[in-house]
Length: 526
Image 1 (cartoon, rainbow, N blue to C red):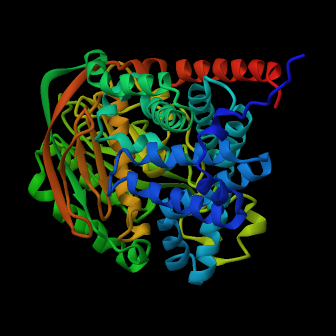
Image 2: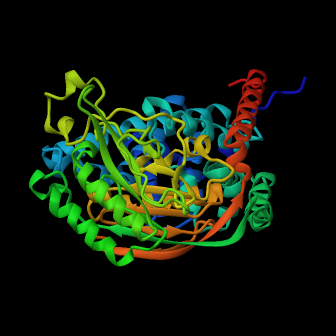
Image 3: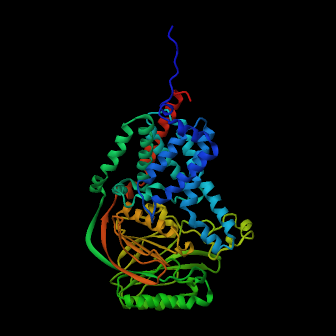
């Protein structure tokens, strides 16, 4: 009778003894994983080491698969995520400390609390990696798992999709895939590549690596199917950056001087077809700013210009406020004068509000607790999810205010065949001289790639920029300087596959892959 001989799993065969001891040490392994996650920050702007996520996510996959118990895998995934988000979102504590009235240590504690919540998603990913490690199709399963977890992160508790790995690829060869499969598709390829690297080194399994290399090398061919074309038309634009210090923006004594500054910066550029002011550039609520708006509307129309500006819309009867964009001056080139009227329909009201900054959950309970829950302009009402494009001088613009640019599903829901440009306005003065505004600009660039439209980004203190339909930065203003960026935008037409089908094909593919993984797991003993 033949003796039964146990066979070690491939992971065990190729796991070096030195690494075994490292991963068996609970605190040392957690520290190493947190550092690995933190290093991932350098994949994003302004550093842009685009291959780094493949290495750091591969280490996360390896650590989870090498764990002897699911509890250890979960601990390592959480540690990786804590380092990833605490380092990548380090700028979050700046407004909490400087404008929220909390001490530095407490603001850092809140940053860690946010990071701990976000680290739950890598924790779940590590658990799935541990459970599915025996499968030969592990790289595909892990890519599908990460993608669906990112979808959950972008939706749960209103969503916080910042630092999704695909954003790191705005300048890499993978960017050519963005018009077809979006940033989420790039994330799928990155995680697939990372898991394939882990499989190659630990199991000597070559087909996942070959698939990953094929996806990278074939990326330039994808540009032939991006779906948009240049129209041959151009549009002259002027983007105004006022550089108003955050602590002065809502000072009632400075309202007039701020409005005068924006007008003075704009006057040399009157006659430019499209002028953009940033988020809440006019520091007076709309109903109180009407005399200024009517005068500005007439001046713009006289010179043949159209202006889009941020302003706070307020209803004194209902005590509701909206973070809004309004248009002034020429609505159509054939108009004899300006078109501004209070509550006119050619406006946009921000839909995706930032928690704490623009609305406070459990408001009655939290507002009395600390100054951070009572920041200026932190009680906005939500605009509709689907709204009309803004019409300025016969050009249709699809807008997003600040944080909204990180939600491609909202832009896709409002994208129209005749949308000419994407527009995002922001006030990144909250975050000082940090990496936050650079990451914000990188996210905006990805939207231009996904939708095949030029994008205008106007901010209070930088980074104001014009972005071509291929995601390339054409021009940008220095941070922390008042100025006006002028440029000529090449207009485009057509629809990218991503703007048409969004994330649904990859979501369905990922769901099928995970169902297949679950079915196979029933047949393979844990």
